[in-house]
Length: 199
Image 1 (cartoon, rainbow, N blue to C red):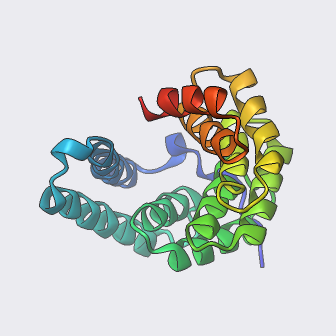
Image 2 (cartoon, rainbow, N blue to C red; image 1 turned 180 degrees about the vertical axis):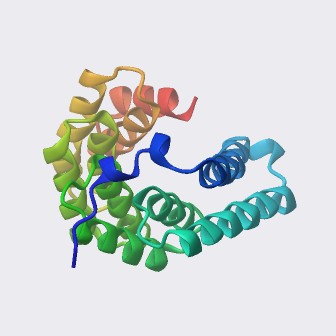
């Protein structure tokens, strides 16, 4: 099977109609993400419409160019964000296998999809591969999350602290570190991080 290089699919090289479709799908996709962040004002019907429209456009783009890694990644991410983790895992694993230059985001979202299904060993492998590509606070926060409620908070705490060393205002890192510290009976520091992460 021929390798797929990300550079070959730079958005600037796409034809105008394909690019417009990708922008439109991304618009609906981002609207869905924004809605999930507003829990008190979440409208399930409107969110479902955004997901349906984004998925439909991504599918049309896949029909036009089945090997496009950008569309594959976006669609897999949408599946992961809407609890269709098996589909996300399959698409991301395939995307990684056929590419000569996998990128951090692919491994990070693959890890998140595995974690969503409590397949922590597979998630850890994916996150560690992501970290080997770039030492990124998001990946460190995800590695910390893998140890929440696993009975070994001391194994996740260093990841949480390193995440916050790189990015002190990382809310997910603060939240995960707080949960781990509370589990480790370090209550004062734990609740402080928990509160900052909750905000």
